[in-house]
Image (tube, rainbow, N blue to C red):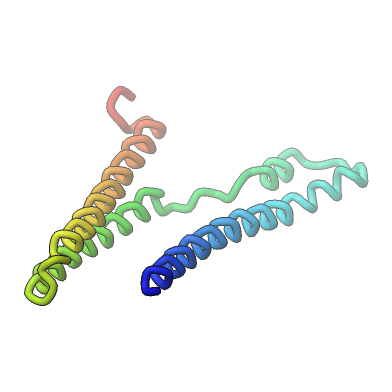
Length: 139
């Protein structure tokens, strides 16, 4: 009976993740639709459109001054720290549940590896943006 409860918790987690992803996609679609609605209405009425207005409406959101890699760095730092914390937790819990030590330590190592991957992604994004801007090697 306990296994069914754990399965339901896992199922609920994945359902939540799926619904969150779909909700984000739908929200982005609706936002983009509302952004382009004035342009479509003007075209249907046969109004003369200024090219700068069309370009502004057709362009996606302007890039912020914050580099894209900052979010990967923040996520990576937090995830590595969480992995280290889970590793320390495994050492503490070893006294009470020695059979769980390696499992919890493995989960901590996995979290730390994901964090390192995020930090590597941030560095790759920085290299790509610098190369595209003409500041990187070979520019």
